Length: 142
Image 1 (cartoon, one colour):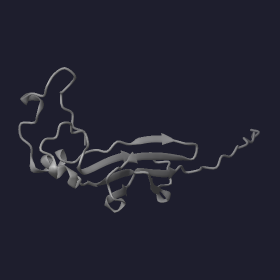
Image 2 (cartoon, one colour):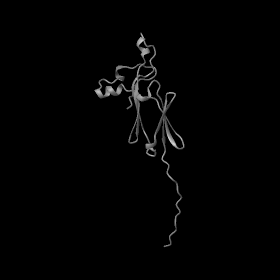
Image 3 (cartoon, helix red, strand yellow):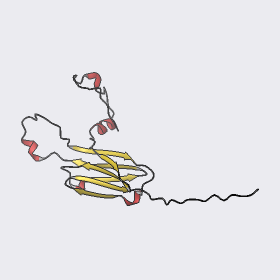
Image 4 (cartoon, one colour):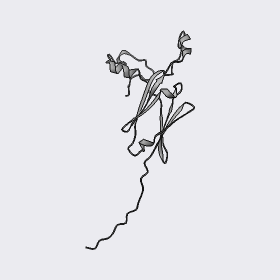
């Protein structure tokens, strides 16, 4: 799900930038944030890295359906916010999040390894290793 609003540098959001009416499903989707991810390739695997600060490991879901990998969870707003009379800058996202990635077909999806170190979720997905073979062509007389 991608939402694109026509808000750019140098202009504020106007009524035309916002949806006029949303269905219940659209409202639910509008409240789900996306986490940032990096994806890179090594010689033997595809690696996905997602910073997941403030989320307990038990509250992170990693699901695979066919070749679509989905990271989801919920980042609870810390109690320290309850004393705030006014929030001056709000860039941190709290609430449910979800991010889906379509994976290529040449991966060993049954061997995905997920680890967390210093609030960085790392998913390593090995590439399928196909043997290479040189085939000699026989010349047939005829």
